[in-house]
Image (cartoon, rainbow, N blue to C red; front, side, top):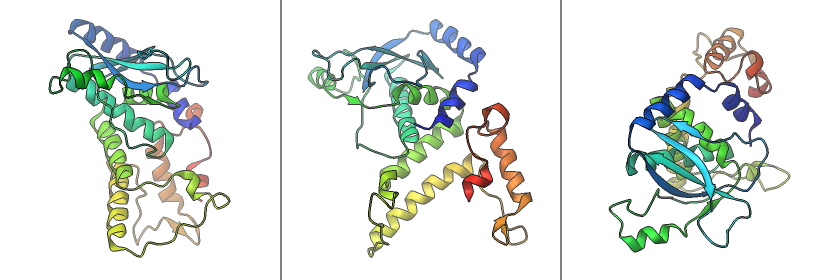
Length: 261
């Protein structure tokens, strides 16, 4: 888990918007949906529920299955006005979990469900969903990030693009460790090149949508004699600061210049 992401969530909580969302959700009829996402017990450094998103709320509840498949694990429960709203929230949580983990570990598609929904499934299919569980670390953190990301279109579409990029191609970070894995050679196959390129394009478009790309040109290059161009670096840091990723007490690690070297 990236401590920077965790501190970003905890330090920048908008309590006013959070309370207003609770009030608004209370005015609408809400339905309870199971998700199949199971926490790994009492993990350290995890935010506490409830997680209030735009039009939905996520809490943690004891597992439905007996005996429990994960000791002390809890299942994510969604409350939303419709199945579509709950499924959008679940997709966003799954995408934010991949963002936290930095990779796409399992090819899994969970479906929000209860006794009556989704309506396009038969009763026996909905019952079968109770046996489809996904247990891993950092699920509460993913819920907290999803709640924040749900409030701006460019954020939740950014998560969807990032998840799409990983679905095309992903490399686990351990496979990039020279001491752990052999060097990954350049593929000889055009089909791989196409897959890699569209994966990169999708991921980079997220950076562009957030306005966090390095803005350089032949007249104003990003590097001068192997070092950051101070003007380009300052511009990037100012935009990052406005996104509350670095600045003052919310700084979570090395500076942008150090990270880029």
